Image 1 (cartoon, rainbow, N blue to C red):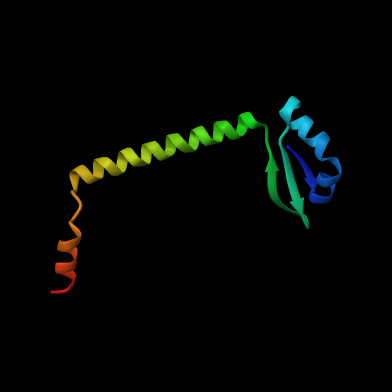
Image 2 (cartoon, rainbow, N blue to C red):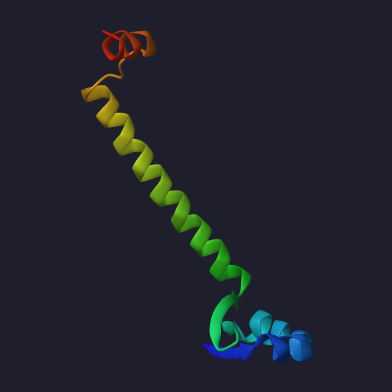
Length: 84
């Protein structure tokens, strides 16, 4: 992965975007020596979003199974228990 400063990014944005698009290069952008952002090929972003979706789906399935095993308590019941 290539690293560039925010100043270099402004000066070379066109070239960096071309390298990202055609050479699938990943670029870390730094500011005051600290990484603050990354420019990645669109395919990488799509893959990350798909991975997030799969993780979210797995977590939703776990929550649904837990809810079946331990049904939620109605709000009125919770209030009644809290204010006894």
